[in-house]
Image (cartoon, rainbow, N blue to C red; front, side, top):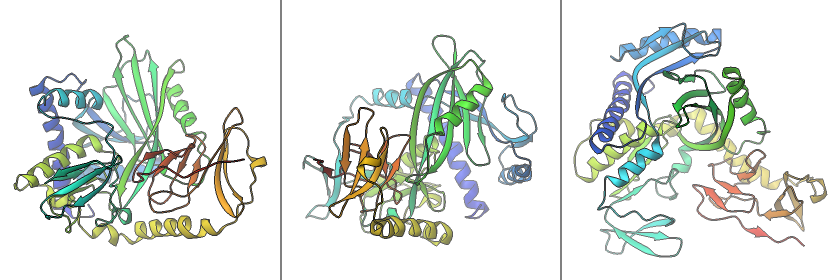
Length: 421
């Protein structure tokens, strides 16, 4: 409700409309993507969260949407209460996207074409989209849908957004599929949902344990914490999948959708979805399509990407500036005390050789991999993720393999590789 009751209602309506839009597309195009209408629950396992949840129910009701407080759920975990939202949905996004592709036979999609820049052409009416192979594509309209915008100026999204890592497991179980979808209200965040498998079993998906990308702390137990929850639900479940994912979060927690910058007409952006990308992406698609066609969208004002309010969030802005200064200046001035001899197998450390800092990883066979531990985006010093074995940027969330390959934006270039004698 930070934007006021009317805009809060519009934000809620936009996401509810997105569910209807997606369902309509699935039905019209006959896309098989396991679309299911389910109830959604925000639950708590802490007594001190109960009043907050009850207040949230009243706020949602005041906006004209159905919600109720329930003490009991089907969730096979101890819960003290929950908000119940009816008529929500889940579906397989990969199958959905494949269905969209098949529904557009005249649209050409080029994979493995990495874009590194967008520049206004000399005639000022078009843009040159430049790929890493220095190929150029001319376009009148450009949509930057690169997760985190790869263009720094103008736009300045690196001042208005940070990234968060979450961890996910998929556990195969013989337990019955849940009728609802669940997420808790406290930290650490945990969400649970299920889907049926072709072998007649159920896949339990548990996600959470999120943290700001690049935090310097031990992350090694993140999957184990999720596995503990899975074993509480079914001690005999079998862990089939583990993965992590990164999400962009705006300083006011509302996505940036619309014009990329007032200085780049006909360039649009959709980002900062705050882990709600399945509906937010549909909202973005409709707003941006309307703007290209010169139509008014009733929800565009809520998501205006050029708004200044996010940087007026002094607490979040202060935290971001503090982290950038720490990683860009303070950490760079520190002299590492570690040596190559101190690095154990499966570990990485930042060391100094001949007055140069190196990020060195030793694999399980004892082979060393050295990189310059400075983000290729804006130069912040990187942190080691000891779970995923990656170098992560605490400033803006870029991530790199231990071999230096860029795997998460906004970085578009790999790290400098250092040869060790």
